[in-house]
Length: 129
Image 1 (cartoon, rainbow, N blue to C red):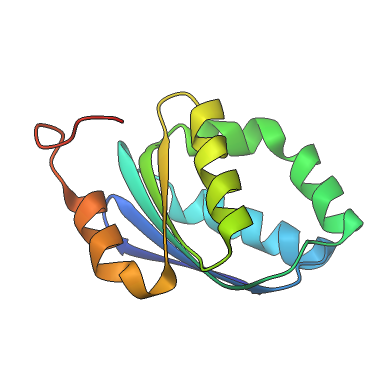
Image 2 (image 1 turned 90 degrees about the vertical axis):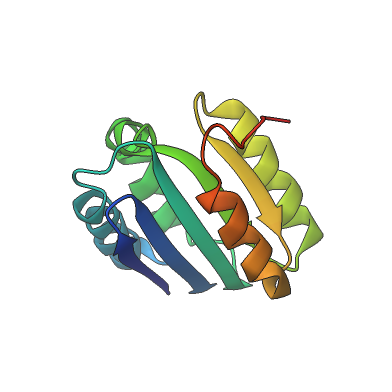
């Protein structure tokens, strides 16, 4: 399951838990695009509670929507990922290096306050690593 909430004019919060199937992926991607409408220089907080690889059908849906998703991802400048899985932390931060203009930092799930603080730093306080 994946839930998406717009918690501020420039911010989305997501909770990822369990396995996504193709119908779930279609719904989530539509919701992600809709809730991102009007965001510029946005922020995301992704809480990965219980990650399971998506089904092959869900991956196919995601790939079919890639041009649309890349346009939406371009609206965001920072994403904080909360996870206790080391491999997800590494993949998240690697993904941040592959998407121009988006920095992704991973935090442990009990470091939510630190993730929130990083997301809320003003650009003048922020020096990319």
